[in-house]
Length: 114
Image (cartoon, rainbow, N blue to C red; front, side, top):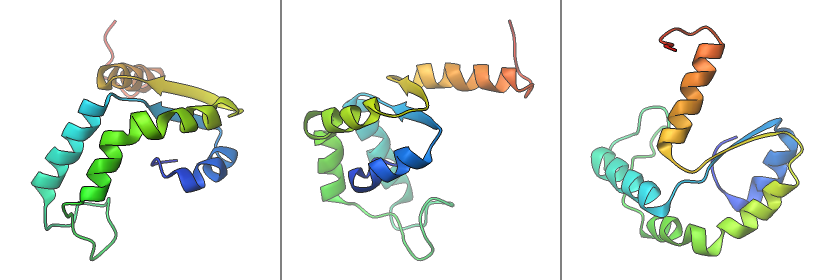
């Protein structure tokens, strides 16, 4: 599952067998949103946005990202507590990269050194 839209979180959790929670700090999320917005402003982001939906500057979304940890994170964590599958929670991009590298190695995808 992808995204943090709270309105469908419970439905998506029921349908999932694994939860990968990117619990990154606000500054990481905000810097990525701003960088992506400036890089793709006015253009369609390859494969991520529907046809005809160009990247735009979205104040409400920026405000949501800035306030997420304070206003919504606790609610989402509480809902995830009852998830009955495998949970992977990452608090930094480096931790996620390490996990993905380990996963690739365990599946014989190459590039593994040890």
